[in-house]
Image (cartoon, rainbow, N blue to C red; front, top):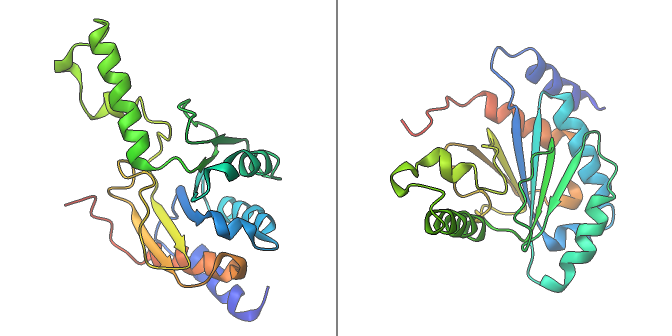
Amino acid sequence: MGLYDRYLAARVRYSDAALPERVAIVLAERDLLEQGAYETLESVFEWAIEYGAEQLMVYVSVLDEGAVPTLQRELEAIDAPRAVAVRGPEDDQRAQAPIAISIGLGGKHEFATAVRRLAREVEAGDLDPAAIDEDEIERRLVFPTEPDLVIKTGAERLSDFMIWQSVYSELYFTDVNWRDVRKREYLRAIRDYQQRQRRYGR
């Protein structure tokens, strides 16, 4: 670790501000085609846990749905420090592992799936429509975690990942491409988070 990285690490560690416990990373399919992309992901997992993260979410946006099975196999085999749950666009099982990875399962699709599930339960007489509230919706989402921090590499553009869960998240954009992400980029994101005053929509 270089001098600047040690400086950043010290600022993060000795700050009175809280560290993000739930961190989301937004990637594109093309990011994982770069040489060393999976090694970078493994490193980010290690850095996140080193700096206080209890839960990690990764969203991989996909243009070619035919690439999903390959990406899923590779991500399920990744060397991660905690248990990993990988979910694709057709998988509506909840991802409750410490590290949850979404491949092409956008927030609109996820929310629509939750609404359809609610509708079926109402139709079957298992759920009173008057009982449907935010908690009932959240219980039917594939990704139940609300991230404290969402990190997007490569460009300042939002995706539709976790559109329900991230409504009060802090967003951090970096123009550094995924292939060039180093520990200092992660530390900058954490330091930026520490310097914000979270308002939770207020």
